[in-house]
Length: 164
Image (cartoon, helix red, strand yellow):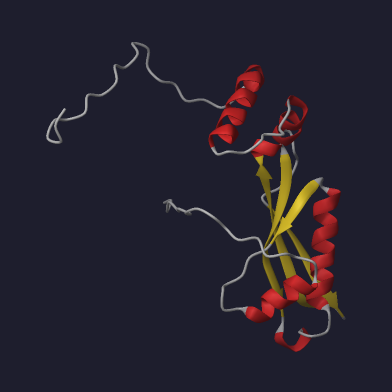
């Protein structure tokens, strides 16, 4: 084959492809495929059937928001988004937003929201709480480290697709 020749497409099956939601009867095959993907990426999958069923039935909303209030005034909030490490069968939580009003900074409001976020994540069976910040926001990084977070560098590329 030369570089100018087109690559031949694989022969298509005679039955059309059908995309549908996963069913209960798919659980064993789904577990097998999750393990295969984990192995492909060099991970040791820990997900078992019980954990897969638990994750599929997890009753977590898209977001949980905790607020800090004093004298009927909101001083800040923490917004948490549920996630999963499917290959390991583990629930995780991301501290997606942490905001403290200027006049309440330095009073421990952020620390209390982080502590409450950790407690919430643990009560929901999460094994990890993550948070991120911009590289130049060294003040926030210092606060997160002081609250028990450890640096967790991201490896790989991240992509996004805009939706209508």
